[in-house]
Image (tube, rainbow, N blue to C red; front, side):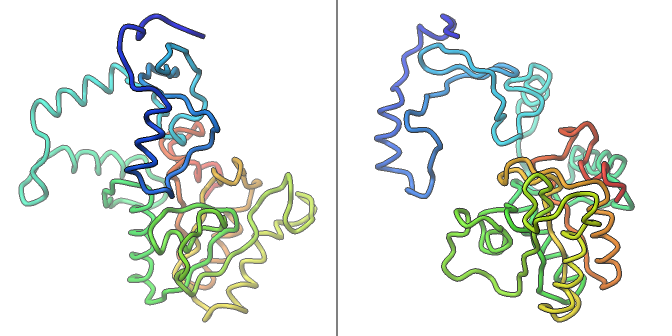
Length: 273
């Protein structure tokens, strides 16, 4: 749908952007369209390109724009903050970050009470993995095939999608379990007759190809880049029981599913874990 709201503004256009991108941006940063549009504005659930076309944004910036583009309520809060105080680092005291941590403690499931704030999902997963190593003394991990956890060395090594594993020397000590994809089961079984075979195999992996106590099992609660793969009921509960037996921690990667995107504050709450 074309609109006239941005037609008066002059933009360099998609061709010029692609030329500059080729000259100045590392070639590993790609896009998924042969003729990509230049997006110039967003408003709630809609995006607008340089030619005035309106799009319903179902992609939402890889699921991060769950409150809409340029949401007036969010814009007002951001504007108030940047007009008051922008950055002082943690050498001084400010109240907003501890107030946010307090709110997170109220809504996170289980006994989780402390927060460590990060800038990206990659950084959060890297930090969680490091904490798991410190807590257990182990550097072994179990991840899922077709999972995506980040672009740093460790999180890329934890990723189970070949196109995102570009490190020629990945971190060792990582084992991969089949993902819980009932629609195209990698184990050739059907739920519920399978008795959660994809979860049960994690126990076999721990017993046979690890030292017996991996630091953590990491999984997206719903796999995003794998095609929105939703695990069957009971999957994570069975996984948690297996991990508890071996003293292995569970890292729920909620980068794409957290903060009410699935109807609850965290998607793991759907699995009674």
